[in-house]
Image 1 (cartoon, rainbow, N blue to C red):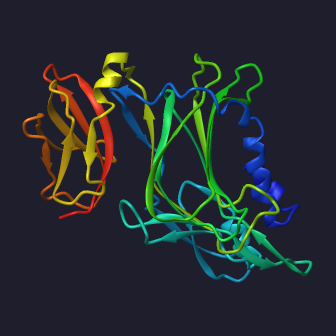
Image 2 (tube, rainbow, N blue to C red):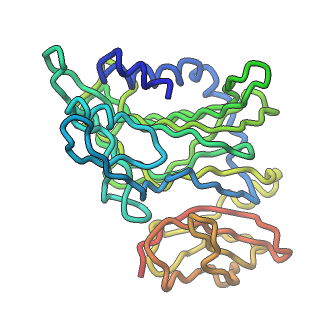
Length: 325
């Protein structure tokens, strides 16, 4: 890991500042590009490895032998923090959207080895291969912002291996910053920006952090994340279809006994409900005359609703939370 050697040379508070700036310094100029990804059909989803944060492993600190848990598949600084007997900044939380856990990142204060107090941010990142071009990173978050200048957020980098140099070139990115507290889990979908529309990434890196500014870190600022997935594009809706589905509403969300569909176009006649693994768990007919879908027997968790026309063409997809019944 390239940041590992850096950690050994600087205090923990410097680490996340370095990581954040390396991935954001070229982003601001392109964030105003139009998001042409917002209306898509025939969407497919890929789970982020351990993106529901259900899998953790217990380790023992090298010197003190004190046990601590670290999240599987993701890189954090908890191993090194535990070694120095600093407070951990990436922890398991029982506040969750799906499964039993989410990840909680915390800005913590600590006593420096050389004396004096400082703060370090929570940080976790993961890199993994992709076979297609992701358009959105989806998930749920909560936040607790303790300082007036504190931020929490997510960075996404889409890279392509350069066959000439052997290194990875960044071909796309996404950028999500939270500046206020959010007491309950809220869903998000971050569009990935590709300056070159012909770019074909082969890897995705996702960084979660409780700090983006070195001198704006307040102890206790926290960031919970759960149920991460990537969305890919099948084909883009034409202008008439955009207008047709722009007023469609699916509610309540979270739902308990049923979903209501208002302003449902007449061409829709069936639906499928998929879990986060992409497995169909329910299917049936729906229409503007009977615009309600039963959720009887569904467990608590995150699901995807797909709507189909009479010709079995997929025309709409959204996600929702079930409270279980």
